Length: 446
Image (cartoon, rainbow, N blue to C red):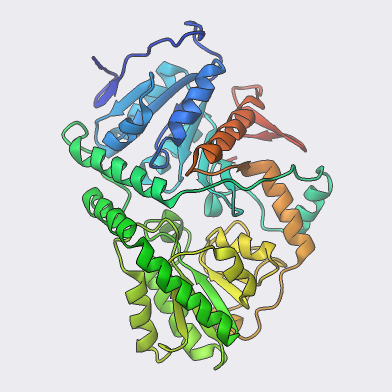
């Protein structure tokens, strides 16, 4: 039986695990929404083993399906009542740290405001700033909400004081696993709406629609791979210069809140129109589908239609699958909004323009002019400045690993626990984390 904690909050019984003391731990971590899948359960298991108090707020049946640990709290109230409920949870559970995935979800934005008022640090997960095989875990917020400066001289000075970066190894990733986890999450959400009557997803589609999209993508994988191989073969045979535009997820709040675009369709229209008007006549544009796109919209068809509309149907290619690294390496430049594909290209010494707010959009690193000019004179990133930027990111807000294989999750969990265990309380209840350069405030917004 669950019990109610205030209005609309059902708390699952907290059962002591073997070896975990019954006394209240000195650190109590509250997990909010995570990625679709077992990431937060794995993090919770590791923290419990190390003696942390661990709690998890479930906002829908998908959250609850992948939790399955003690300390679950079902939030069944209205969105407008969430800040008061969270304030109560923080007080009654003596929460010292909050962990969430994505700082732009409405419930998470409200939670960050509450935590700032309560002086509770917020650790924000996101896809890695640097690809592949890295995950972002940053204090306070990411991209447009990041407190990292945009001064290239600062990064060069900070990096000079750091030891060499630790050795890094790639980890496997499975699209099939990601798709099946998405299907399971959405099915659990739909089937338990009665239990979470006020739940409102931050995603733009009904979960049933999204689930069908994942199923369609799974069924069409072979045909999509064959089409992509044909495009790659044609590009290699022609040796024509091309620019690369990797799409982001249409549901990505980093686009809606940290750029001027309402979604991917807006960005696609602007990029193709600019390419048609200003790119050299012999240049091509390659649009690359995001590997985790749910298939709800047919971006291949929309790209082709826009290219025909602007008279460049014979110069725009579309890749549905495949490794982005060799495609980016051969490109003349990469156009992005604020995708991690930007840092991947920069690591390959490929010019990048960021059309939205991106943590890596720094002078000497990315192109600082207009998109219309980028097609003809993209310039080159400064390798020394980017290397310094990368080194500081690894030290402050990156964890090795990934989300879509057991090995990748093992590495992420190890890194997350290490970062949390490096924290030390400061006077006045404000925790801090020790980086290679000293103690850094972990208060949200500081």
